Amino acid sequence: QKKQQRLYLVMLNKIILISLCILFTGCGFEPIYKPKAAAARPQSYKLTVTGSTDQAYTTHKLKKELETLLPTISQKVDRQLTVRVTLEESYGNIAYNANAKAQRSQGQLRATLQLFDGGLKPLHEAKLDSATSYTVDYVEEFSTISAESGARERLIKNLAQDIAHELSLIDIK
Image (cartoon, rainbow, N blue to C red; front, side, top):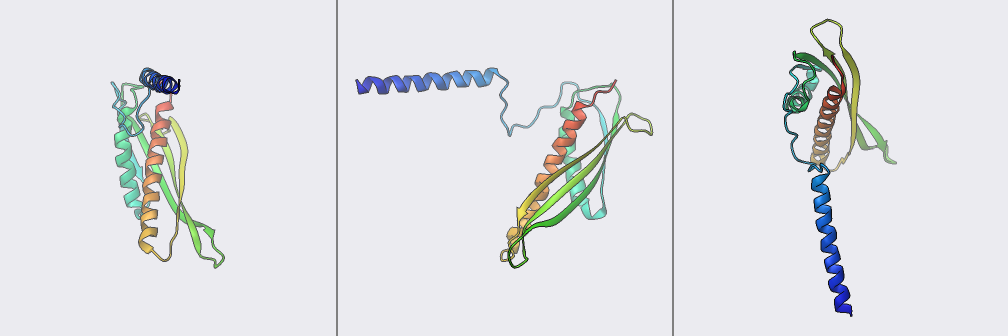
């Protein structure tokens, strides 16, 4: 009796597992870390990313991230569009302990996005931002520097994805 129940549960689990596999493959399930494929006919963009000279790494890295994301946007018009991104980056402490030493810091990356179609007036303008925080450890300076570097990388990737998403939603005729 118990052996039959166990066998029944094992078979039921296998049926559920097979059903879920079929369901996920049939519903457009896409792995999270799989790189996005280029669109069949990607929109052509001329990309300009600017920021202060203190943010040269962030500016360069955001441009490289956008260069990989922009080809995933389908073509809306048969001419090249100009994208201008202006960055502002800031970091500051947000949480303190009883001794008035910072425990957490926050980074914020703001972008002004402008889309041009050959004219002087932008077709579309948007302000986007991304924020993240990290733990400050005064005893281990390396861990604090590493945490700030990781926070900067997260800010750049998140903002690049937001910019690409914003551009993909714009309806141009």
